[in-house]
Length: 115
Image (cartoon, rainbow, N blue to C red; front, top):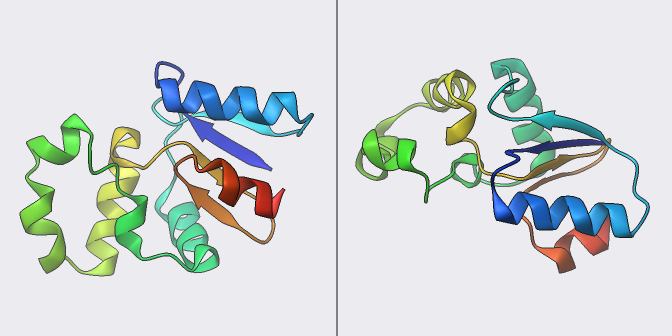
């Protein structure tokens, strides 16, 4: 399992503690230092069953600075994936990626259902 996080994010810290408390093994990856590639994002999006918008950190400073609330709806899927791959801070975190699931954001009840 892959756990993508931003170490300074308190939600990410809570999610990591939640995984550790349950003895879940995972590969840890700093989303800012080693951002997801476009190919990874495409695969995770397909596996997740979620709308692509769920992969965006809509409360983040980069999202707001780029005015994505207004411009995102007019972008193609390919353009959105490219944008996400360019800046890890645009990606919703934490991101938990397993063989058969992808979880964006930390919702303990949802995580419990797949772990």
